[in-house]
Image (cartoon, rainbow, N blue to C red; front, side, top):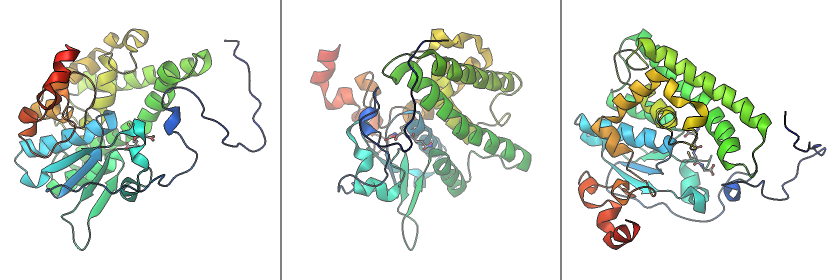
Length: 297
Ligand SMILES: N[C@@H](CCC(=O)N[C@@H](CS)C(=O)NCC(=O)O)C(=O)O
């Protein structure tokens, strides 16, 4: 056990100071907008307001997968919400997601009024239903797909809010929460590994929205790109998760989807706003700001 000082909670908690650690500046105990800001509106029916974090990537991969299948109605404008600067608390964004978190989608094609969708799994299900894709037709396989989709939504907060927070973002390293969440995340990886030992994808032979939801989180984790925790978690030992991660990563729509609303990494991997399929060729950051790219290299 560690010897961190213990804390006696007061009778009633009050918000007196930032709790410390990375991202502390965007944490608040109240909801609602902090400032007035309209959202931009593009030319397509689907308007995505997001960022290329794992939750954001789920949706851009789905949209690129739908477009790759020829669904023209899935064309979309993707605008960037900079969560580090508090864009998620602007009034226009809060109107489409009262929970102030990316991703959020506005479908302007619906009558009599546009449809807002927030929570990444709700967006995946909305798009799957709208276009009739990426959810198995067979009821048992569909149940399997939904089960893994909801598994991801329930499990990732332990990975991000628990393990990631205490291992990478908290102001100090405390053994108790790191042990607690490392144990849980390794258990989760073992759950995935055992399932993928006997299944190509989460719902069997068919690639579905369950894979799209799990891949940006657990795929990044086993490749060591999340929280720089690859060695600590011994991610290479989860062989089947690694096999599946590599297979999904090879898909062209996945390669495109992960670039959208990305504002970090190699300039050629960043398509900060997407309005057209040609943007992947013409509007990545190396093309928009070639001088910055030269300085960075
Ligand atoms: N359950 C939500 C989680 C969304 C979420 O946590 N988004 C993060 C980025 S990955 C965010 O917007 N954070 C900003 C904040 O907490 O203020 C979903 O799956 O859509």
